[in-house]
Image: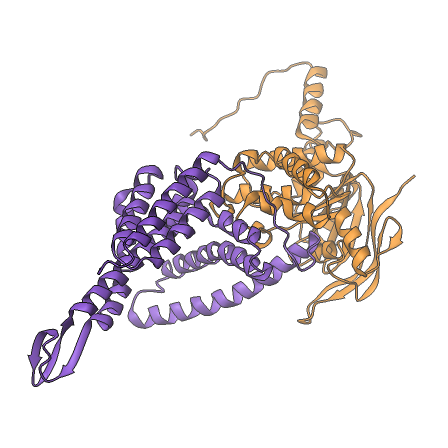
Length: 296
Length: 260
């Protein structure tokens, strides 16, 4: 049965400076899934995340955790924040301490755990994010990517049921971006629900189980990646591009280079397999001449 | 300042228990300040220099440049102590007589100046020893353990962290202004600098709000709990510190009634 760990129902929110960030956003995060939230800058992704963690309180509407409406007294909030962790986009906005260990231990210490437990969690989080070697370095001597991983470790150490990350791969080189995504998969396999906000349609398309598209403070589209990214109008309306896999696949299908009725490929390996099969079925003809430079 | 921070993280004494370094620096500083003659302060200055240069392996040139830093203040202060201005001739004053006013120094004032000078130098050396061998993070954790009020300790930690964040932001703004000819002339330089400072203030305010949000998200309840790493204390080091400081203390007492 579908079970939603987090839910926002028709949430409206206006910041104190008068900016209306959410206009009736509804979103349901299913337990154990990998969820991508897409949307251009200012679509309201970060604002809805801050509602999931109880930092912001909806002006109108409701937020539910484990099917129960979130209460805003101290104890309920602590319980919510223990279970829903947010990693923010800019690590310099999140790192408060010059000491890596102090930074990571902050969350677990707030949970009132024993010293041994805090130490175990800090070490496990550092290992998971591969920053054990940075233990004795001050945070201001770390690179951007390293800082991002320290921030992630600081939230992982709280062992949340839901991990929310705002643009986790923005500003990372491809190698580290790949490592971070693998880490999310690993955490997800261990049972945590992972929610990512991103602009990267390719990444969302290949990685997510379910996709939400936000625009101007509301959820304008949702569905399985294939559904959402096949909907050209939705993407255009929310200023998103289409994943290259979808574009290439459509072009190939339209030109008749791929048989009809194949499902959208989720990974590039899947697309290559399609091509391989097609090549295998056909009688190899005379290869067409390909000129790298125009002749004449 | 940033180089001090770098040496603190790379010195040979980096992994010595911070409490030992803190105890050594502070005890020695107080003994130095209690001295009534120049002998012990001079010894302390040499001792700290030896520890920093030979044991912690901080380049000597850099260390002596650091020692010269407070010299300006020191000389200005000493002039006020030593110079005596008196009307008419004064047999106790060695100096110039200009238009009926004697400008010069007296023997006791000179002695006092020498004492203040050496004591200041000794105390500064002790603090340099601490800051060149112990990262700020560890000093802060010692202060926490010494029950310094949490508010002060947290402020120190945050200020230390944000010095770097704000310096980096300012550096980037400066480069970006410079690349658009923001510092081409005196007038533009003043304008650019004014904008930079104003912007930096707004940016810092914004950052502090964002940081608060991020702390809340991890269960912040108004107090930053310190994580203390268990570290073994070396008995050998403690004995060494006790020996050195006891010797200095005895010397202070022995020389108590010496003239200088």
